[in-house]
Image (cartoon, rainbow over all chains, first blue to last red; front, side, top):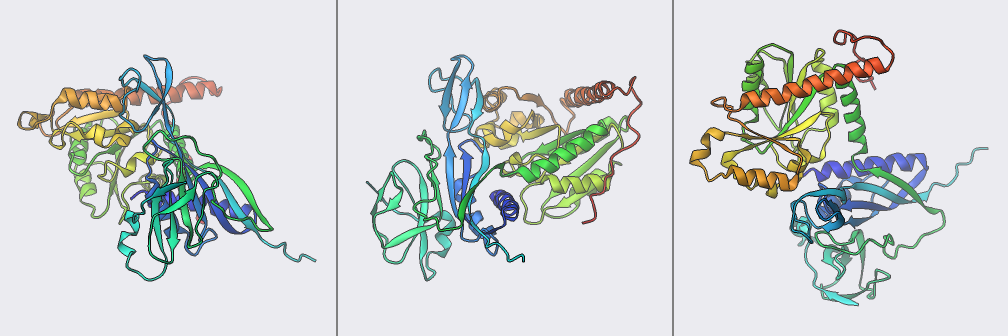
Length: 121
Length: 338
């Protein structure tokens, strides 16, 4: 269940950014998750809810955007979409594929509720 | 408009009988997933695909939605996200654009720098439990027989049994117990390196938690992941656990002495491993009878030499003159006290 560690990683990035932005609350988060990454979206979602309890991101809506796996087929000299590691090139049936996209696990953006400016004077 | 049948999220199945609204997971026709809460009975309902908003007032979205469709050739994500959430005054969007594992990777980079300065080679041994990592390590250490320094970092959920076995061979070993954790991370290895304080030009062997899934994602600062596959596990493991075989630079097929007694086809194992990772090196060994250990030691030695040469070139490149004897000074090993 390494998704718990990944969810903690997401929370760390949110807390850091929220501090920097002086946010009162993180309301929404957009996560890019490659189809060939080492994470299961539903497990990430479950862990995210668990680890954000009692934090600045509690109750934040998590939107997980699936990035398709993409590989360069050496014999075809062409970019192709693959659903899983170990799948063949859909054109030539070969496995000489060089992964080009779809392995990322990336926090893209968040929506925050700004803190009221403190009365300085 | 599309209709879908709702189903419990596997993760939520155990809480279905609890009172109150229950998040329900379902999949849209475009392959995106989301959960939302229902106050009443579950029934098929409609979604407006474009606006990604629910037509009915009887329920609202829960905290999580996913878009884009996993495991299929989905159209790209719209980026629209946050389904129907209204922005109120003072809300704003902030771009982050950082890897989920950014924190781990930063520590891994520190570990790598530390090892680089010491011209030490670090190998991260990964496998399922029982593939023979510890036996292989013990045998490897016996073969090296003090010709260069070896230190070992052992990861297990519990006990110091493995570190005890390593120490019995005469090299320093540190046991990390991960408790409920399923993998080592870079911070654990950073602390272990600080404690072990390996000498220059050492071989640092990191035996990860026996788990063919989770350790694949975590960079520890190693030079290479080495995946150990034993013939008793079957030749189809590379296809069943592709992330690990994709992350590894070397596959050591262990217990090769048992091959006559198993339905393990070496050609199939090789083919499957190369399907996942066309560049992976493959060696056939037996920690028990010593088969193939020369090739394994030669693989290690080639990487040790390459690393030391790189360090020497790096020194020369920095204008520090001729090849120096192996490093004397090292960066402070202890993390700052805070």
